[in-house]
Length: 205
Image (cartoon, rainbow, N blue to C red; front, top):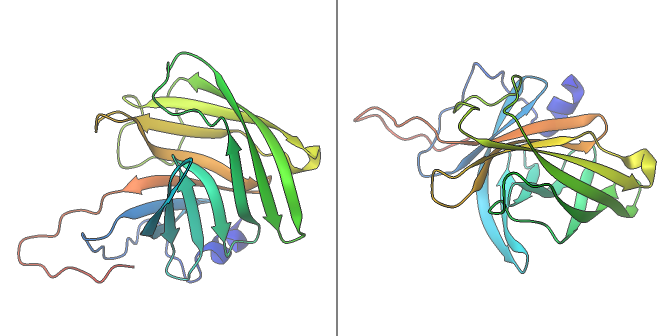
């Protein structure tokens, strides 16, 4: 897992040593094996199935998120080069009901195309163990997603999502998702602290 963290963020720093943030940027805190990497939002790609946020690390690795779901990666030890969703449910439905959708992903290395996941989303109680650090887990609506994959040897561990309705529109503020059976990470929307009056803004990281 330490090697994985190095692949994701070369020269990364422990969670305790936060970089200097630029308040003009939007950040995503990505955690692998207790090691935190702060990614910056590069741009939003508007697609027919929603808006894909494209996040960059300082070393150029890329994470793409569609409504909180992994929609592509670049520069990791295993990459999802392209992801296609079918009947992906929104986060605005009945929070007490289970829902389902399907996903196809193209993987590298190995040129494995069209790996299919049949996914079931189920509401769960707030977990007692997570990497969530910017807010309390209790007020959030939590979901777990379990999948059955074809081929079966490319199955993934369960994913978890925390959804906030504080802005009026449900939004994933934290998730735990796996790229492969042994490459898992968490993603948390991160608002940098407001700099003290008169303090110069950083150029970001």
